[in-house]
Image (cartoon, rainbow, N blue to C red; front, side, top):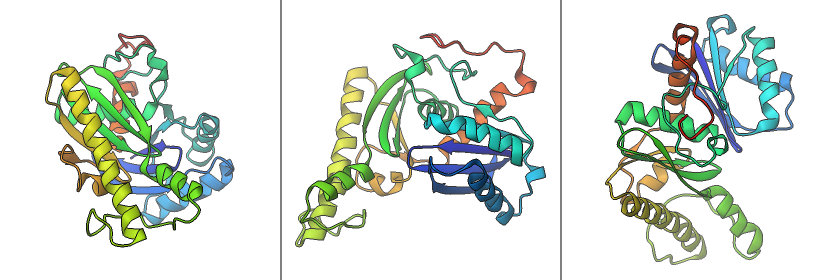
Length: 269
């Protein structure tokens, strides 16, 4: 079995694959202050609760956008699973040209999503990932990663509002009954949800106009299902997109594929 770990700034998502099928998945908080052993016990407890023994895990692949945690995660895998994990980092074989001015600047999670989306849907795509930041990534019709946009995520945007506007109450991030709120909670929810839907539709529309194409729009991430309900641009919600991207990258970089040359950190990666 393959264990995939996607470490974001707010949440860490784990999945276990049997072949190409996700048989278990979990979402936990990312905590840079937790020790190697605290994370190790947590992850092994999760896998055991899913009736998966540590010995059943034969390979591990990790995508991490929190650099201080990378070394700890590698040591964790070696201590608790006796395995050296594959890290998604510059030089890894992606099978996708990266048309960024400096490809090393592209977050690992964005590349993972792009790789998975290209394999599952084909070229000409916009991938919207609702995480700590909301990212928009464009894959050309010929399957090249062209770049995208980064916006503050819905949760951190809401937190900024609650912290700076002391008289406004904290509210659940959920779709209100109407756009025109009749009380404070509903008004805040309307502004957050429909305002964010407008942000998504606006950026997608500008990307379509700039590229002169009509790409398929795929969403993933913690808030994807919620926001997709109120946008006109999102066509598919794929909650396991990142996990599948990690699986695909593992397959492309496994020992069976060692004959291929790793991608180089350049515009033609």
